[in-house]
Length: 183
Image (cartoon, rainbow, N blue to C red; front, side, top):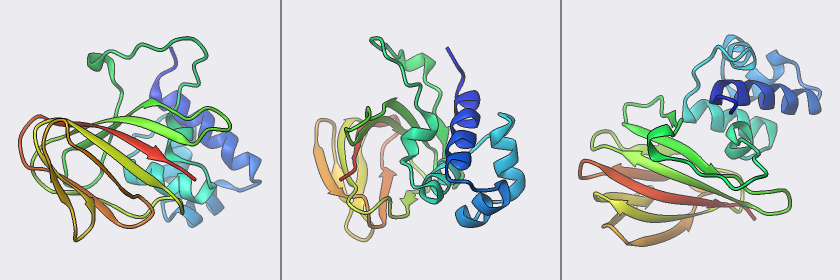
């Protein structure tokens, strides 16, 4: 199985070259350093969720395209084997892609694991994005910035992901399933 860094390197280079962008131009459009893009394309970088989102927006591809395994057979992912992408912010937030949308479909499935502390504040995603969250454990304030909703295990929330939004654990061991739906 290909590791996360190798998948990101392969996919980032493929998507950049498909648009005819130089490393410098992609870095400029994503507001990240040229060195960061170069390191990611060689598989030596350690990207944050924010960096991958910025690159995805600059490349006009969902975050999931940069990290998906593209498996054709049934996929079993053991929780202990998850290779998540951490946030660069002070928040203890990790996103692990569980299932990317196949061609023609528009949804990505994530397992989110969060600890209390600094909230994870997300910038708007692609226009038309809706996020669906089912809280599995713990407790969290989730949703649009300025209007988050307190969720307990088993609660479901849907909100516009194309506006600023937040995820803040209020209890240790908080986890959730997040489905990012793109229209």
